[in-house]
Image 1 (spheres, rainbow, N blue to C red):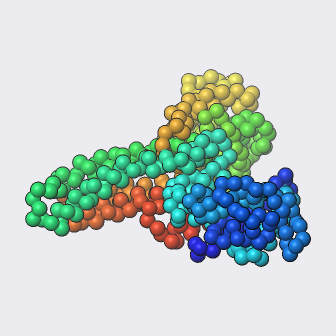
Image 2 (cartoon, rainbow, N blue to C red):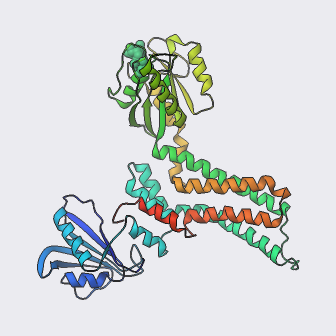
Image 3 (cartoon, protein in one colour):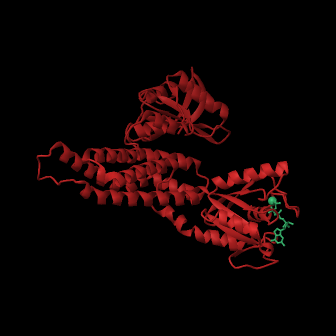
Length: 436
Ligand SMILES: Nc1nc2c(ncn2[C@@H]2O[C@H](COP(=O)(O)OP(=O)(O)OP(=O)(O)O)[C@@H](O)[C@H]2O)c(=O)[nH]1
Ligand SMILES: [Mg+2]
């Protein structure tokens, strides 16, 4: 229901100087009049007042009023800044509920902003990303999204697609109009090729950027005793994992997170890979294999002073993955390539290499890039449809071509939420916090 008046506590519910209780909907000004001294309400004002429950004063507050069309939700809105105690904030919320408000669902204010056309769905994504941002780059990317970067990015592609679709439709519907441009498959093909290239570039950039923005899931692997746990500890600058000279020390996965200059690594130290019948170690190695499957980056550690066939086998096995071979124990033997001494905390050749390698990707923060999973998934679906139709285009009628193109176009519409799909929308806003 869009016409009821909703309310929620918009600030974190803990002791603080002030809390904000927020309302949106047609009834909110009348409800404020019932519970405060304010009798005459004008938009875009902040008013000093008191809140009363059945004649008893319960708090001294400031209330901001926003008129329809000029508010976050585009509805009439009021925000009560009350004292920040948990008790009084709840008291005011309950008073609003008693006087005709309904408790908002998580994300419902933003959902209304979307449904009322103030923001598109990609901007709503970014608002959620901003609330959850934990780093400067995540926040910078979110503010770009809030200010419409995704619309800027995909609108030229959508416009061109729509033009071609409508020209084909004219051809199909009015074959007698020979003045119109004739859209044969031969004419359409170069367009589709161009769109595939553009969509591919968008997906590629988005995925590269996602990794630097959200961190790379990085596994440290290698044979036993090569110094994997020592490397984890050196990167984390603390003794998180147990290090001994006994092969097979690490059995469980040990996790940690490190922020380098240009990237964040979500690290997992693993059990050394070798053939073993020992029960616990065997389970550990199975876990290692699962972690490798899911990793974005593999750091394969070898003991520089003792490289053998098993190390070379691991290098070969993972050569098509995002693999970095790290030569450890440089104090015993120096190697060309990334040569470190985890024991002595001399790991700058690895960290410098990684920072350098992701330098270009980090600068994508200044470009318009798809910036979350939902958007990337839709662009991939669009890309898949375009590729499939491109492969079969010579065998297909114009009718079939336009149907496929329509499908691809609708995926793009969904990135911006230009097509309303109730289940998708409900699912998306449920991930928001209450009061946003
Ligand atoms: N000389 C030298 N020794 C190292 C270096 N790094 C680690 N070691 C030693 O190598 C041994 C094994 O180190 P760990 O870090 O436990 O090796 P690991 O790969 O985690 O071993 P597992 O957990 O058993 O698979 C320990 O005695 C470390 O002190 C290094 O850079 N130089
Ligand atoms: Mg270990």
